[in-house]
Image (cartoon, rainbow, N blue to C red; front, side, top):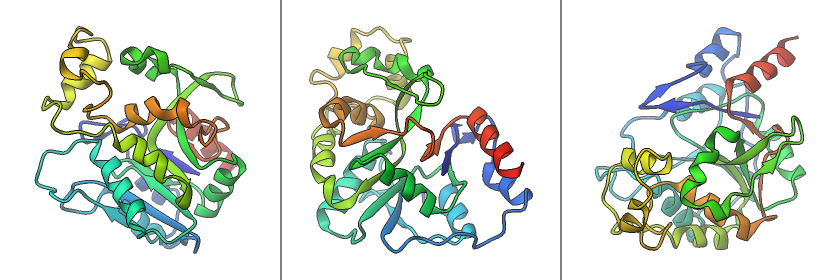
Length: 262
């Protein structure tokens, strides 16, 4: 299982630095190993190692770092989609399974074998972390795509979170190609905060058609693009409705913590 922390403005929120907490709780170094049929990737434009890289170095996991061609240019979250697409299309990933972890805010809570077993149980080509209804407002710009999955644990609405996903390497080129078709840095050169404010209703929705006349083409959010194409690729794309692949919020982490150490 993977824990996807909440990170805003380069600060870990909620439970804070879970990697350090796990060490304080007795997690030894080199506790895990990367399965031979899995490649773990992360993606960023940092000049130094990211949070998840330092975590994986500690627990003994091998991984691949994807970066834009020019890391000095302004980062857009959709650069991740281009990196994913180029990596798969190039054939550089030679393993059957591919696991992506967001660079600033993810840690392993269980061995990657457990993560792989959870993925296989969903019988899909690409499985995403689930996030609760507090992100429902993000669909303000695409209400026709609002199709929540329902948690099999507590019957709550869940939505796709693109910070953690896993896939069958040879089965996702068309999915990434579809996502990549909406990546166009020339459409809009605004600030990330402006897009977030538009998405959350703090900027008038009329700006949507002005900024993005062929929405979602040109937006800066990879998650919104994956949410846009999700209905077209379901059930090949699925969400972790059982919370056994990855968890996002502190309440679920606390439940895992109590179970693990009881």
